[in-house]
Amino acid sequence: MADGTFLLQLLMGPTIARPVPAPLTDALTGVTVTTSAQARSGFQLTFAVSRNSLISTVLLPTGFFDPKIRVIVLVVLAGTPTVLMDGVITRQELSASDIPGQATLTVTGEDLTLLMDLTHEYACFPRMPLHTRVERICEKYAEYGIVPTAVPPVLMEVPKPTDIPVQSATDLTYIQALAAKAGYVFYLEPTRLPGATIAYWGPEIRVGIPQPALSVNMDAASNVESLSFSFDGLARTQMTVRVTEPFTKRSVPVPIPDVGLLRPPLAARPAVALREAPVPDTAKLSTVQAALFGVAQTARASDAISGQGRLDVLRYGAILRARALVSVRGAGLAYDGLYYVTSVTDTIKRGEYKQSFSLARDGLVAQTPRVIV
Image (cartoon, rainbow, N blue to C red; front, side, top):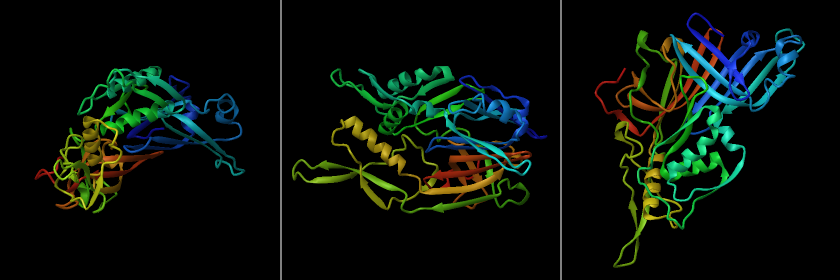
């Protein structure tokens, strides 16, 4: 699928994905890809079919669209390739019709983390810190081009020789549980090379060079179709731990400071926490584990500002990516500045490429006097 500005390429296969036949590309009528920082990413492909088409006579009967078939969606914009999705099929739906041109095949799937969530595993990791366990597990999926990148926790603790960590869950469930302990995230990020994927286990990346600015209310310079913000005063929570005062033996709640170890602040005026809640389930944790867990809980409860918008990629001039920073300008002093992109939904049709996106940050007012374009 292509027009004069962008090119979409589809690759499919059991383990190694290869370019699909030209008739299949011609039959592709729509692509939707959703990438999220909080949930598993997914995709949906829509094909036009007929009784005597290649899809009906050859590809469907031979299992070309069967579940677990790998799918890679690649877009080339202004000469730059971007892999939007590297995943596997989970579902197919055929909608037959007596009206010519109305029959469709819809293929739905999820990213490669699905492969890590199919089998319940039992394993031991003696004297292995959290990030080493993650690397050991991800190495099992090297045939899919998955390369682990695990960042050591902010506070390191190696298990005692007598305390052997045991996995009794799917690989994905166990890795996500380890990420929750460290206040980290885990996701698969496709590289520019189709078939190569980074398995990232570490803090949310809220630093670095931001993506091209989202401009609104700037006449000819505007590059978004819509953009709105909301400030939820109850979103931010002050986490506390209870400490026993040695003389009176009274239990006193001590606030955990937002030290910015896991999420550097994006706003000059962070939102005030109206709620207060104790850090849960710390009774059986060591001092290091409890401190790390408390910092993680504080970081998760820090975003009070959220944004929703929609843009035309051809006018924006780039492909907005989730799990990265982006600048906003034209929204006013309170809401201009840097944001973290929490999710992006790509919707592609012939000659049209739109994106819906969600943003988040911890408060109002940009930290810099000028927005980074």
